[in-house]
Image (cartoon, rainbow, N blue to C red; front, side, top):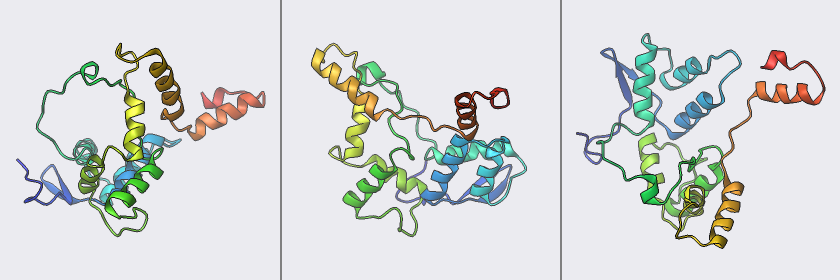
Amino acid sequence: MRNYILDPPPRSLIIDGTDYPIETDFRAVLNYNRIIREGREDGGELLEALQLMFGCIPENVVGAVLQLNWFVQGGEQEKRHRPSNKLLGINSDTPMDYDTDSRLIWAAFRRVYGIDLRTVEYIHWWDFLEMLSELPEDIRLNQIIEIRTKDISNKKLSRDERTLYKALQRYYKIREPITEKQEKLIEALRNGEDPTPYL
């Protein structure tokens, strides 16, 4: 079992017995997430993301992806039974997005830790995750996360509260980015062109 204080967070991953150094700065992982999420026309986003994180493409791509997912999620934690969303009073909507909420994250780190995430030399991804999870409740990011995840079907809420939360959830909802292919499809439909190449 890893002790976060005594055991430094990893700077490499072992795949099939080979130790691969990886990029561990939070910016690298944010870029990795963006590449995977946005995709590429040719479907090469996975190889691009692996190249970014490892500086090469490991021979065992599946093993590399599994190890990288473990790293990006902050390492394997002890499996604990989490109370149901209903019991916690939350919905299943996405609470936060690193791109959508980038300004809020920057402002929170600046206010709470005095760190400018644009200019700080280095923060290990796992340290970044821990700092993010420890932001106080009065930070705007956490207030918006609470709005996004509020279960408005809760009977304890008044009709006015439900109406307010519904409107706020619509306003703060995380929207999936439109890919280049989707943009071309929309443009083709607007111009009355054949959309088949973009389907």
